[in-house]
Length: 412
Image 1 (cartoon, one colour):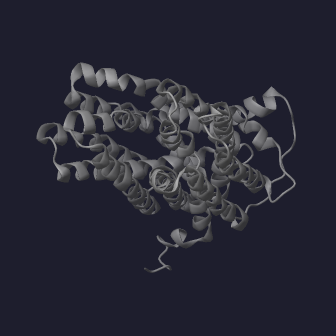
Image 2 (cartoon, one colour):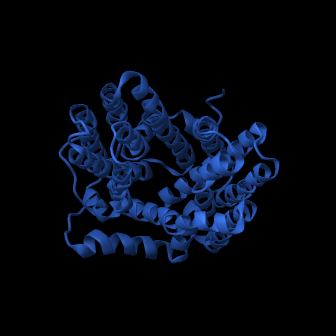
Image 3 (tube, rainbow, N blue to C red):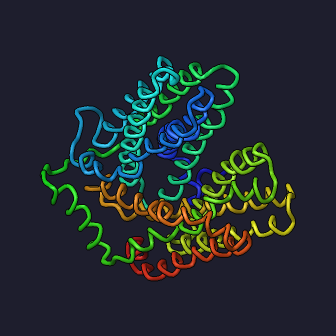
């Protein structure tokens, strides 16, 4: 591969290694507060009603924008402005994860709950600062590749602390599994230590106006239109709506086994998402951000319709793999472009606060609309449901045209 090719040069910069390692650090804790935790509690004999209650420990991921301004304004006397906070959160993540070794959920369930809430809070705090560091350190031509390498690390970490962790626990026990996972945190610490950052001096002002209003006003007035926020809310809506019902459709309607779904939809799906993210990043070097968001958004919309083939032909493994590949590659491409767009929006003075706000806004659509997906699928049937999920991508594409001028001004 020709490393001197101007289109490939951004892929070989040291920053991409840092993005991969920090992506791994961000992705590692997430399954430990959700799927892997549920499996651990289930095999420990915890009542199923309590398993549902444990889902509230993930609230810090939703409300992380509330304390993001403090991470923007306050600096630590270690490393640099962003890297100091990243290192501190990783330090706490290591000790929280390894603490599971000494706690038995059968006898101390409340301690497991407290540890998991702390894990989610520290992990969400790490995400705030990692997102800000990514937005601050990547220039225009590096945003696409940086997003793809971040997705690579993130997905590999979720695989390690998700599927691989469950396999390890089944064979070697949960205590050994958490011990290994705690030391995987060191991978992210290496990324923090080798990363570089221009240390920015921020004027210290305190109060609600300086912490919240000023970053919001900067985001709004600098880009001149509330339509930016509408676009952020809508762009991934169709993708999220389909994702809420993909597994129930594959198992209950088509008849694939959980092993089939885990292997193809979850395992191979991660690989296809990574491929899509890198393909999207490579294309983004050749085309502008607006066209990337448009073309990749259209692909996301069309990919939802692929599952209609499974509704028609039933349990066909070739069609299954095709649908999963098409949907995840398109989703990976759309994610790379969307992350680049979010990075472009942020002002370095307030990037932690602004990225936390807009990333929360981007997930709000999933939280608000996706719960209706089961009722819709049950009422209208699967084929109309897939058309509806595809149609939900259209408002996002229309709003993209409304913000076209602002995107091109930012690329100038």
